Image 1 (tube, rainbow, N blue to C red):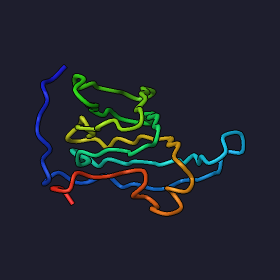
Image 2 (image 1 turned 45 degrees about the horizontal axis):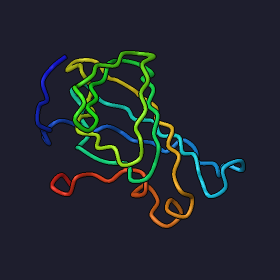
Image 3 (image 1 turned 90 degrees about the vertical axis):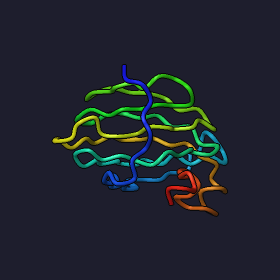
Length: 131
């Protein structure tokens, strides 16, 4: 795959929609959150972390680049999935196409008290230089 490349803040940001949130009765103290991420053509998210949350991603349509921690950049097409452990550094998250949109869905499991206290900031912490 490609070498790592720096984040370009001039690229359009994805549209992020909170689709659902449910407290998990079989995992007391945990909440599952569903998030839809729609990348416009050439869209990119700033480098970020998901705190203590566990995240699984699924590409609904299009292709996305992902780089977690020091792993190589990976390309995921429609139907592709991955897992991000708590504390993972999501260094690259972008649409691989300059002309077509891409849509992905993330399932996030987070501490309920943290989510109730911090809201969306509990599940995505963007690097400060890109805020």
